[in-house]
View 1 (tube, rainbow, N blue to C red):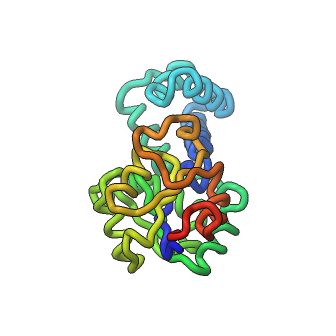
View 2: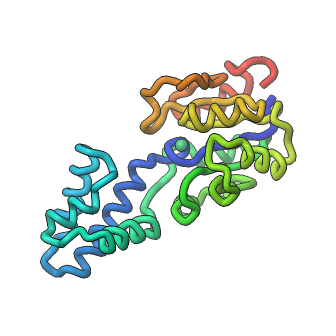
View 3: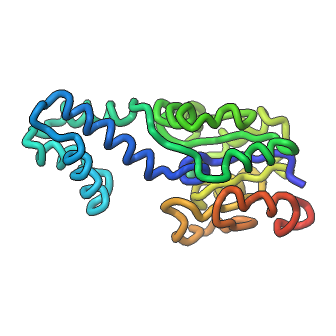
Length: 228
Ligand SMILES: [Mg+2]
């Protein structure tokens, strides 16, 4: 049986899309606060429509232009900063709190998350997830963005376990499963989030489940293999 788990955050324990929308709401409110003629709700709708149509690249430029505000680089940079620093209104997916509590009875647990530490730390705080695990690691603070194995090695050190008795759980095969392979740990892929319908990018997991709570029966020996 596995003794420790290294768990991804975004799209594994909560819906990252909800974070993006939370950030848009905060930015829209900030713009509306500075420009009395701008309606925050309408601005949010423009951002969401732009995201759906073209992705994140020009969301703030288009929203400003729609509101009749010149999207000069300084103004856009200010909105990006507001987005990154906002206190997100996000929540763990159903069953995640209970699953972590159950797993913690017989595993050491680490969350290892990628991305700007300012943003990732605010997500962790908003989700209240720090109290549910033994360690939280921010890969960018270790200058080892996923799938660099260096931060995973640090997680093993902090957890006091070897790779062979540790399982990596995450949604992104090219990051989470690739890192698991690099350190010699097994992995469980969750199909939640935007990678759910994507191929495994050459990094197949040892088990695949629909969502995080469904990793429990796999880990407890049902479908993961005798050594798990
Ligand atoms: Mg993820």
